[in-house]
Length: 239
Image (cartoon, rainbow, N blue to C red; front, top):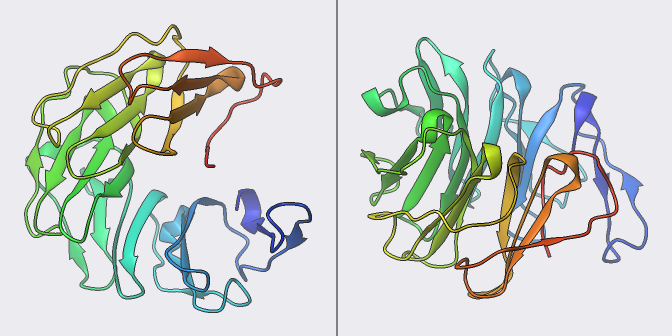
């Protein structure tokens, strides 16, 4: 998904891509599938598009004025989205329970990434080094000390203990205890990092501006630069 409602779909592991209609002309910033048939997007104007037929049709279960940057869904009727500042708070919203979270931690901070390790435990990252965590699927959220004031763009976990967050100015943060402590391993770049992906417990990739790709082969302890062959901004990575 991308700008102006652009969407493409493959059914042969990427050999061929076909146009997919989202029935909107707005930019979508994130797409996540929780099964072969059920998926969601998050976009500008508070779009939260949902499909239950592998993208053949989409229904907007959101709608508003706030730009959304990421979402995480654990079922067809359960999930959260994050986004821009609305009435003084970074947007943290459950579209199924209509729960809008406004707490001191996300005051005047754009929220840019969200990830759940299981059905109860999740994290949100955003501006100013923000990391907040829930252990009850969003009923309450608590702040964690990231050790940085850099903008954090995405976060991911391989289990409830081991996770990586990435952000601007080459920021990479690693935790082995669910975020109680975060460390900042050396990674050799000052480029903004926009996405991170665990292939398994040891192999992790991150990508960012100016074609930057980083890889760790030891669970995030050390990182090396890989050649992407492009100088374009890279916004997502998956394997």
